Length: 282
Ligand code: 6AU
Image (cartoon, rainbow, N blue to C red; front, side):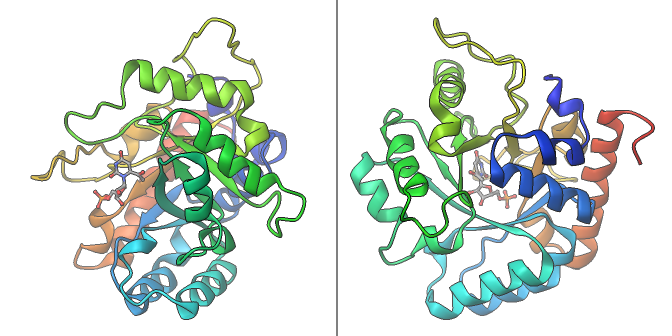
């Protein structure tokens, strides 16, 4: 595990090189939450109700905006205003994977206007790192209104049974992040564990000070896998394994009392983090 994942969030909120990571760690610290809700809901009303109800317990609200059948201005306005009200960031789980110029059009403008409202998006390196540079070009452009307020996560591993996002692919993601990631807006990874010890491509050095943020999906307190191939780990196992933020979907929103479930995941994720950084901080 890296030296950084042993540090408290409030330290990383001041030392991390990425402005969005600094903001995220500050939110996590204020709210005592490293929980991300994956709100895979399919209409604007349900999505916004979920954000309003669970907003107090999360640091990030994750969307799949292309499954919202009535997406429009109300969706965007609602998400942005709830993010302000409850102090959370928005992560659009779009998994950009196309050639750079297509990905730019999918991200900026288009039907979903993702660059306008999502603080964070994720990118797959299946087609190489052109897509990272392409989105990096948009978010670092001097005329981009949200410059300094947008971040990319590299999808370095997947939780699905039989995933091909392993070994060389994962190493490549780490190498791309290390090489020119920060300049292109890369903040970290979506992965099942901390990746500091991964990746030793020739010519790509690991900077001792690197502090890539790891978001871990496939989190469920009571289930280990499901019929469609999703593989789960508990909040505690994920944080112990080097994850910084845990993403839970059905474990929370499909439970009988989602507020209670969110509180429980928040407490489990936070306790695991406190145990990881050691005594004397809280
Ligand atoms: O907790 P669940 O299983 O209800 O939902 C998991 C959420 C879904 C997936 O699209 C997403 O996490 N996901 C991702 C992400 C976040 O990129 C990667 C992955 O490997 N597995 C995964 O489930 O919205």
